Image 1 (cartoon, rainbow, N blue to C red):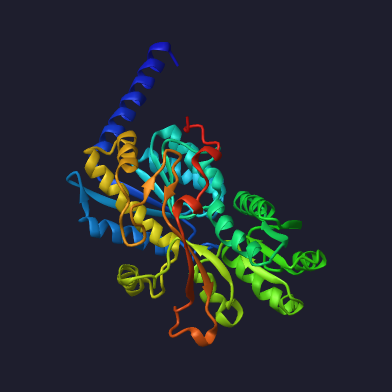
Image 2: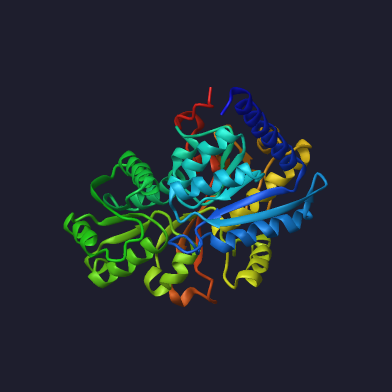
Length: 400
């Protein structure tokens, strides 16, 4: 290849890239829902998150800045490499924002790509507190919950009620490890002790060996630092092992309404959990959840509600900024208050953390429930400033 020919090829590629970029900017606003469609987190996000995003778009009016709003979706399979490849293709083809992102490994990978591409990553499902800590970026938001809020809500309450000796059953990846780390810190800060932990692979079916190690520790509290079907399988098998009969209490450090529904109140009764949302909190939550139920035939999880909330706020910010430019939109997202059916007077911090009240719930006894999805009773409202880690303690490089 001659030098002049090579230069012409490079120039043509550059011009094609510029033309594609300009075309993407002139085209529809695109929202990508990167979800778990078939794995352990499908019930808390999956197609329900896609529908929640579409509901937000419909409620906004279907257009912003005179352009139509489109949704694309894919199954990231809870694998960072697969999720990154999908996200790269989406961003390069004009997707403006990616939302949902159910596993923390996926989230951290997509966030770094978003930073590189100067696009927005809106994490509404994954939970690692590192998302707004050492791994924070100027282009990412952490919308619904995190491991710090779960540990400070549920963990602190259990210790204060006398649950001092803990053993952790932990999913062996970023989310589980940070959930264990954050909860262990809360337990010890409040006078409790951690007697040990064991880690299991994501998607474990047989928990017998892990439960035997927990039982052998003599800990009275087994903290389940996992989620989805891993959590429900661990609870079901613990009942078969008779752990509760021995006076051991299982604590779900992260549990979703789909998990409690799957377990049934016979097994789940008394379970303490922290959540950003519950369908039956008030008239607004009930009205929105009924619309969701009519589409999905199940009540929404907090992450599905978060997908709606985050999408609606993003569209408001685009409208207010008068542009889809990520820097301008992120500035407006931080400037505008967050108000919708799940969040009142919330705000987006510089580290990407959405500050909103959280709620401590307890699973009802079967005789207390009046319908299929009547599962929780409210124990306490946790103010945002108590629920989430103080800004100065996270280690986010954006915090001066």
